[in-house]
Amino acid sequence: MSGMGFLAVGVGAALGAWLRWALAILLNAVNPALPYGTLAANLVGGYLIGVAVGFFDTHAGLPPEWRLLVITGFLGGLTTFSTFSGEVVANILAGDHVIGVLHIVAHLGGSLFLTMLGFWTVRTFS
Image (cartoon, rainbow, N blue to C red; front, top):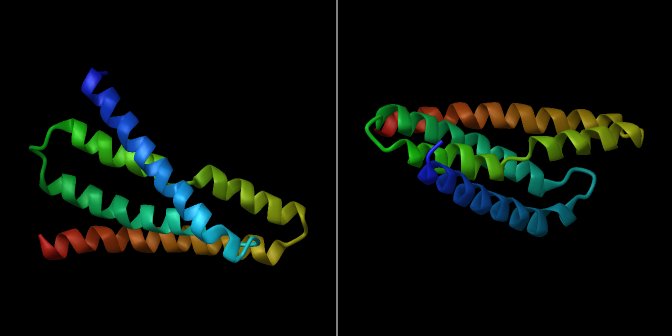
């Protein structure tokens, strides 16, 4: 582990977490049963991980700290799988099974779709 790698992950994680927090502030109050801020963070993160993987795949000569900054740091700080899991369990425990299932479908299906779209975007426009 290098000092620059450590710094890249830390800076990226802080930026990603701040964006996730901003999305929660802006969007979670719209529908508390299905927090849109968490959904937005996961969907945007899903798309961006596809873009990042495609980009770094085609730019292998970049220093590894850039990948650490973007993927491990920023996208790790932005996406909220543990928050998502807690929200689904809360729905289930509250008896809101339909909302819980909708939550799962929206996050997982949307994230997988947007990850593929992000990868396709880089492949198509590179």
